[in-house]
Image 1 (tube, rainbow, N blue to C red):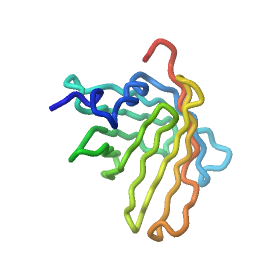
Image 2: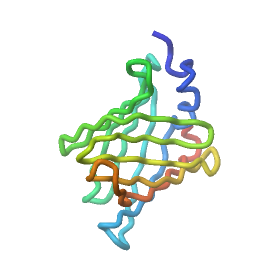
Image 3: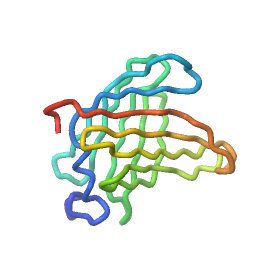
Length: 149
């Protein structure tokens, strides 16, 4: 099995490795600050990139994602303490980071832009009607913790 960092659709992923501080806002929590951290690290074999997210707000669950090439395509598996598991298609280039799923009852998509090598600003949306209408789910920024990546 080739290392993920050598796969042509995975070459930009090493840019996420490290620890990031997180700031977000959620439309159902107006005026409340959501802060936390996200730590990205390779499993020792570099076949999968693991992200552990922790949020200080009690309404936002911590999360774990595992990203890698699955069945020939980049995929991300999401898990949280509520027992939720979701699978996303994923893309990361020098310019941006995207992931999405097309679940007809609860579709989600995220688009993040690299402002520089140490800042990602993004927007997550959700749809509960097979992608016909989309609602803001989360606005989020990731800032690399100095010396972590």
